Length: 257
Image (cartoon, rainbow, N blue to C red; front, side, top):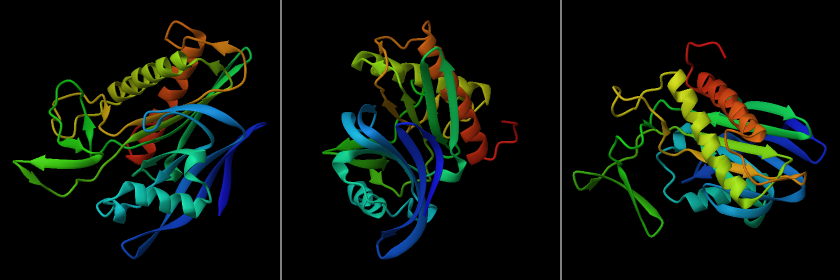
C-alpha cells in the first residue's frame, strides 16, 4: 500500500507499507521511497557517491532488531518487497517508526531545500570525542566486544536525514553540506538536552549510527554550502526543524514541536 506524503514536478515521496521476513517470521513495516523522474547524483554516508533513480529509508520492525545478522540479505528482502533494484537506489535503515517522519522545507530565490528525517536517541546517544566505542568492524562485519566477549546487541536508535535540493551542487558542496547538516543536528541535541546513553552526565552530539543522503538537482551551480551562504542557512534550518520534530515524535519527548 502506497501513501504519497510529498511531491514536486520531478519527484514524489511515498510511504510504502509492506511485510519483511527474517528467520521464517513476518512483520509489517514501512519504507520511505522517493522516486525521481530523472536520475540524480547523490552522496550517502552509507554508500558514497552514486547516480540513482530512488532514495529511501526503511524502518526495521522492533522484533527484528536483534535478529538481523546479515544486513545485506535484509536489504535485499526490503528491495524485493518495494520492487526496486539494488543499483537504482541508495537506502538507509532505522529503528524509528516511519509514521514519525518529519519533513521541512526552505525556499529562497530560485532554490529549495527539503529534509526528510527520522530520529530516535533513547538507546544509543553518544558524545563523540569523549566516549569509548563498543564496536569494531573486520572485513565488513561488525562485532560488539565487552571484556573480550561478544554480547547481544542493545536496542538502537538513529538519526537519518535525506536532504533534497534543486541546486546543482558540486561534489565538494555535497560533502560540505554533510558538515552543515551534522552541525545543525547537534544544535538540536543541545537544545533538547539529549544525554549520552552510557554517560548521562555528558551532553550527546548524536547517535552512533546517524546517516545522511544529499541529493543534488539540475538548477544553478553551487560550490559551497557552509553556514555563511544562503543555501547553507537553508540546509541548517530544515535539518534543525525536522530533527527536532522527529525526536519529539519518536522518543515522545514532552516538548512542543
